[in-house]
Image (cartoon, rainbow, N blue to C red; front, side, top):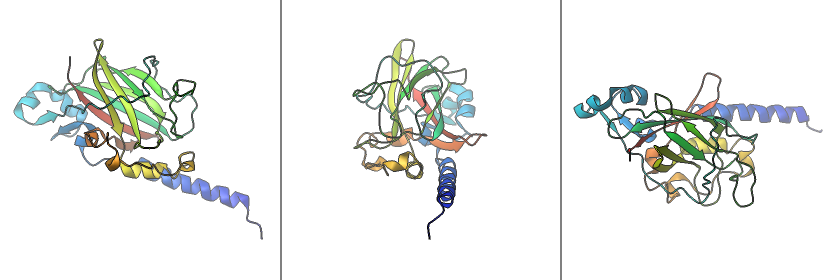
Length: 241
């Protein structure tokens, strides 16, 4: 007896729905993984306490570790919020907060520059690839927040799943680093099209030479927004130069 193709499609949709639910529900356990360690309730509240809280010992900001920018940076990024350009993948809101590592105060007007590969491991603008997908710049608001509409990144041989970032302030680059994801989030994404066409990454966080140099302090916190969209959040403590 021939199987009903509709049954197969329904099963695939159900599997995808369950996988996405699992992916969106993953939350990093510690604030330290977001680059900010505090005994208060979170980065926004902690940052608002500023130097007094730092002096009292109630709050401490972690200087986000510097890491290589890699070979795929292009100095012509566009200032824009939505950087997808129609690429397929899991929609994700990337929320990056920039704070002064010395005072824990949010920094307004910093330019956050991000770039990463698509679900198939491809970067735009290099190696003969056209377009500017998954590249962009946003300015931080009064709370130090810069938000991007992007996709959960894929992977390429020899590297764990990651997003590159630079922070520019007053014409200077005050941070160059990379953002990483919990292993469980990467595994969940690999079960969903188009990521599953490539399978799971050949390199995990613990085996990645760059991640081992401070990557645990640049792990994104994973959640979902009110619409059900995946959200990755990271606070970057930087030093003014």
